[in-house]
Image 1 (cartoon, one colour):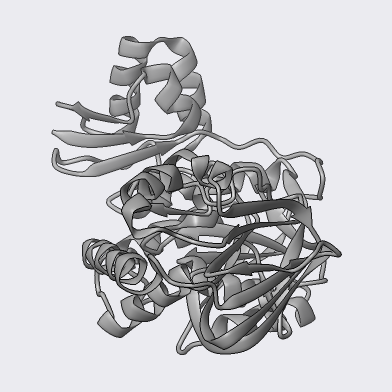
Image 2 (tube, rainbow, N blue to C red):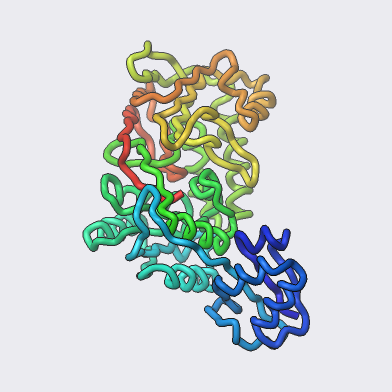
Length: 386
């Protein structure tokens, strides 16, 4: 019995993403059976699209022996939107990312190669994605697709900033904030179909980027609690998504309750030209949600948007007795309404000075301690396919 995966318009036509079909001798027989079940429009789309059998490109005439996985992908129409259709594409994959596997990478390569002139490279060390993105700019590529987590995506962003080379992302990490904020499926193969459709239709957005110390970020920059959490998670070196989630939860509880609840302010924060204010932690974000825990949204900057400026949530105090309520408000977006929390929307500059060194993270990557931090905004500096 063949296991069938349907994508995009075919999934909508069938009302399901996974099916089983018995007795089909070829892919064409399988499509005929499904057409009888779901109607002629399903057959038209399927026969005009592409087929992948057990991770390999296939044809309608490909024989089936009863235990294959058959993926049916609809055709994608080209066209002009915000950008012309990409021709040359570089796929950058991080082979040690938590949800990147060789079989899935092979399927993604074949799907992208069917529509673009594709080259593939893999990162070998921290910072390598920046080098590869810079080489893609010099080499005249139209788009760089990153299959990894938000940290490697951040590296690629720093190689593409200010250029006309577009960024495409595929979810390959533990959290995949940027991919999820863009509305992509969390399954990397389904996300590939989504990305191809967006790229061929010319759908792209010109984004601003935050920056600190010459490093750019798409999502967020945290000074305090979340940075300390990322430092502790890095120490654990979690190999899988479940291990990462357990380490993150443990680190968050220890940091919030053990280090920050009840603590006197030790940071001085100034946003644009507003008066300075005291704080124990600062979340500077460009998306809502700020991040995820499993499928739950952490809405620390609930008014932020990718095409806007910097949103800063300045937490002045966190009484220990209020910790359970604050935890709920982190997920509801109500944190910014608390007494002792100040929210700044669409800012251009955030300056943080510490009475003692404080931890800093950028796009989920812990970058060490600082005693002073200047966060700025560079508008219209990156094309994102979305």
